[in-house]
Image 1 (tube, rainbow, N blue to C red):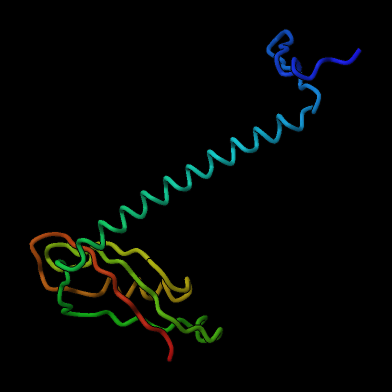
Image 2: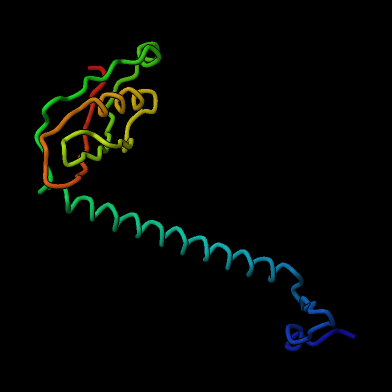
Length: 144
């Protein structure tokens, strides 16, 4: 005797085990995979929109917070970069204290081999004093 297809998903076996029905466990696995994918997609979109808001807020501060540079650090060209013929631009975000000294740095973009020296140079930079702590983006060009 064949089990009726319209009742296949309504049967619950003891101990919380569900009967898979006519199409077997494949539908259950596919549905679970779809749910997991949907949750992951929502999580990524949520993080992405949060990051976009954070970046927009930082950009909003930038026009009024441009500080004049007193001393700009000069990065050394790393030996490994010379051997590999690496060139390019490294962007470093610097947090500048009210006294004009760089408090923290963060690499925003560029090759990791070049970024280490760019961060060191950014830490040696000094800016004009200001009323509050601000952030700026410094670009260091390596090579030709």
